[in-house]
Image (cartoon, rainbow, N blue to C red; front, side):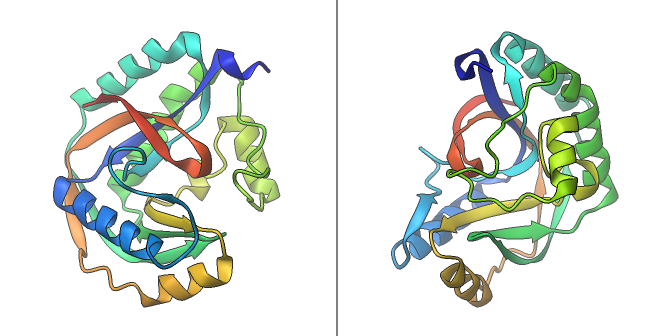
Length: 206
């Protein structure tokens, strides 16, 4: 597979500005003290709630954007309620309650966009840029949906930062006092993706 012919896109729920500002502030404060892979700054790396982030042939970019535009026409405000601060493989993030509205939206996006992958998928989820431990179920999802955490494995979350050291990440996560217990999101967006699951460039916001 020739990488230049493909593009990895993330369809996201975009949090409101007050949440974006708070998550950026938190990301920067953690980065001041610990060795990290990236910092959310709203310029190079953008706060987001992933819905579906597979690899597509570049020729299908416009089709993906048009499909997301169709979702936006029927998109209503989604309520997000904080469940816990989650840490895994040195990622630290806010995990949200998996409500029926979020479940329906995720499944709709996967169902409509998965065919536009034309079978393409990112082959290095478990390689150097991710340092991921991939279960058999996740491998099946990568083959079927191009994304390890699709459908039954999907959990809505907003990554804060990824540290280089897992033990430090566990410690930091246990100490975070995230005060935004709930918020409403009324925007969805398409981003180009970089390493570590980051969103690096806005393609289109609805």
